[in-house]
Image (spheres, rainbow, N blue to C red):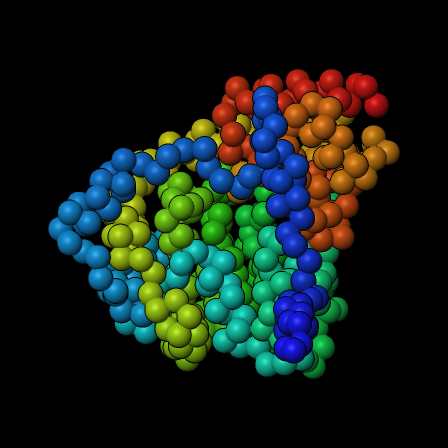
Length: 391
């Protein structure tokens, strides 16, 4: 008689350290419900602009259905390189310093795995995108979380980063404009952080996927700062600015040694990004600026609507200057973030995400995505007001 198999016995230790995404819990709770307004999903409500979709259709019609270089189409890498020179004045060689990936999530995973040895510490600035900490654990590293605080508009300081650095620190991960807070950070503050990065001889991983969605001030590219180009792994993508979430198109830029190591993992796990999506990304970079401008202006109108509305309801909300998230405090209600979000969903059919899912300093806050229509935002504000009045 054969021994009965217990599949869970074969699961790796690192997998057992990572819980399911807290965001998914709220999607599952809302699934199947009627008359639900979602401020939960971090996805534009726009369909990808027609000229980008049309370029993809033409690509398929012309039989472009093959693999590409592991690095991605040279034509796309050249466009990415030109776009960074134009926007930030920093040059990356399309031959060996740019890698096209399937989403920023893959780029993040490759970046961390390429530089992390078992036991290396990676500093994660929170509140942050939920994949950062698990990605470090999957790579065998040790995530060291530090919290940006609401009283500082959720901006991390150089001193706070320096205090977390040890002789095991390999890199720091930042994300501005930030998901989930919408916070941005100024050039002077980034320069102070850069000084710390150099002094302790570590790397920076900068997730800039929301950089085009900056409404006030100017986004500063970390690798454009003096001395930072070869100490930075830049991550960026097409999902947010060009409304191309389903295309899973992104890229990483770094020194050749780093990109080559990332490419090796990509080569054996993904091989290459889909060619059709790469053609769409080329079209986006060449002819997508007008559509980006329209979407950014509309997000800005929604930003002002939701932030003003939340403050009017007594839910103190600092002014997010980027991304498409408002991060109001619900501390005045006496409820935890989870209690507020669950009751709001069950009693008023509005989906939001508890702030502590993104890190300890997000406790007492909610993430409200304003990538929903203005009509839905107005209705959601009415329902949130009814809920708060009833507490």
